[in-house]
Picture 1 (cartoon, rainbow, N blue to C red):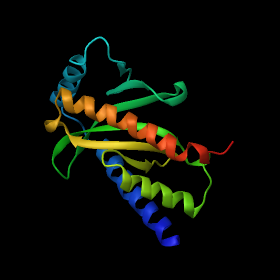
Picture 2 (picture 1 turned 135 degrees about the vertical axis):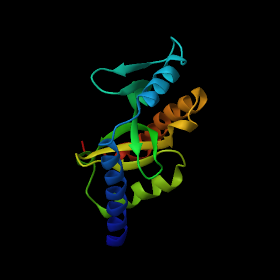
Picture 3 (picture 1 turned 45 degrees about the vertical axis):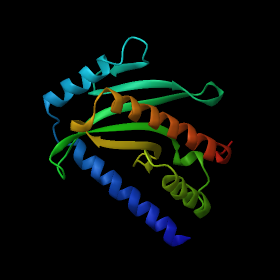
Length: 168
């Protein structure tokens, strides 16, 4: 089990390091305009709003038990592909909400292999989030809607899978 824990922590570290380095690089103004235009096409019935003081959009979804699921869309520069990418993030919980056991970490890894769209990651501050990333050049209105909806659905799935394990 220790090897599973080490593998999980290594994978999370690599993913986080990739996102952290990408966030320091400037995103093209054209990319910001494209994302704003895409959100504008979602219409008046959507539950998304621009986050003030940051280049991000946040959408609200209704989960089970009237739980609100928040999904945030941000652009980051990814040097590996020399392009701006859309990262959709939905915070599920914090690490301190759950028992610190190998069994729990193993189940997090299994959950990641069971879902095909967003992946669980643990950020440096302890937040457990579902993250999906795609190059902005591939995103149109349908893809944006799919990314937002799938991240919210994955958050709901994580709640179903792990909610019972949360510390009381």
